[in-house]
Amino acid sequence: MEGIASNLLEIRRRVHDAARAAGRDPSAVRLIAVSKTKPAGMIREAFDAGQTLFGESYLQEFLEKCDDAELEGCPLEWHFIGHLQSNKVRSVIGRVSLIHGIDKVSTAEELSKQAVKRGINADYLLEINTSGEATKYGMQPLEAKAAAETLFGLPGITLRGLMTIASPDPSQAETEFRDLRLLLDAIKTQAPHPEELTELSMGMSGDFEAAIRQGATLVRVGTAIFGWR
Image (tube, rainbow, N blue to C red; front, side):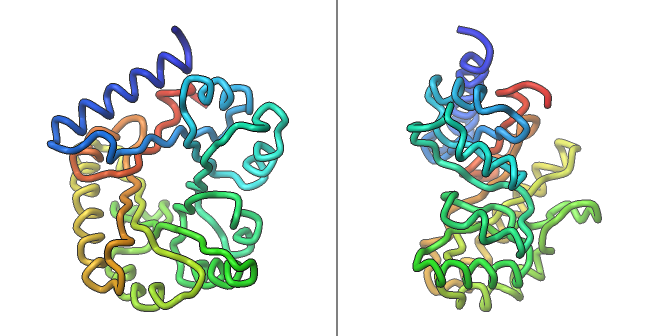
């Protein structure tokens, strides 16, 4: 076994071990294979190795992969993990299981509008800027708390949890992952249905084990599976 298949095996082992070390059930942590910029053939290779959950960030590339003959008949679960602008919502909705990158009330309102128009429900996460870096997308934690009541009232969409991209410094990253978990706990106290808020999307190739220690339910791993882009 070599290449993508062996990389997946190693990442799954590390996810399992990190969850066990944290006293968590490993099945509570799902691995998203981040396949952005990677061709359909590599996604098919990962699928053949047992991976079904994939994350994409670039809309046009994602749409092309959805229609790629090499992936036809593969029961893939797609997540859109990139920043999503309001004018792109209509192209994503209905094609993915979960949208990670909603960071404005106006984008959530557009998602709601499009979901109602189609007669479907769309699940999403709020992207939170836990590091405070100006170059990163995401609501500030206090902004997310203030917006929660409005978000919970939007029809056709369900807030499932929070997402963040942490600082590159591992020691800072773990603190930011903890902060995201605490923020989710706080938002649950505002929610009419707190049981729906189950997801923490945090941790990437370099820090997913720290994220698991802090409660991640979804880890987004690309480079460690597919190699450098």
